[in-house]
Length: 189
Image 1: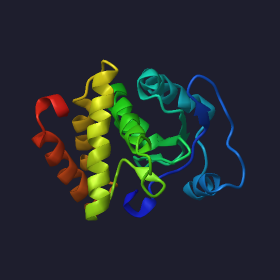
Image 2: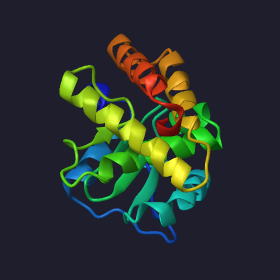
Image 3: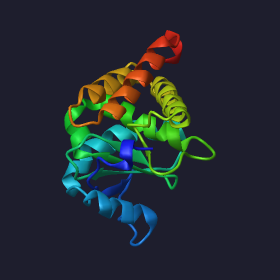
Image 4: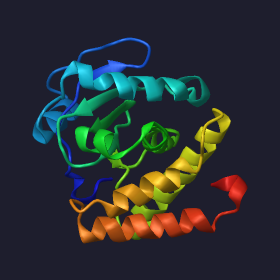
């Protein structure tokens, strides 16, 4: 659920705990190509490391890859592929990047994932906003369960909100999500 589904370049898909190359011709691959392609393999090391810290806790098989786009964004597809842009890698520290991956995994925890690709940006539209808030809460729970800083979800949302390259609609949605997250009891954020 990306604000305009945009904002992403392309990545190198790396299975957590091993590598796998992208298949050719499927909808995800066409989407990746439309985003500009994959970043260089060396750019995935940090993403793989932070994603690995969530693997045992999720129970969800997933892969991660970095898109070449300078715009901050993260996306999840129902097949378990999680994409993060160069722009997001540059914007966030490791705990916030882990929160962004956890948010995407929150989308994947649903039996019927949101319309692909689900995105850390979300939408201002009511149903999509509810889904994004649910993924934010799931990310906080996943971080707590893995012994990590759940407050990183709010910090990640704040940094995204402050990004001048995101649309006003996107920033409004991020502000609403942040307010909702901060209104929850501390044990739920």
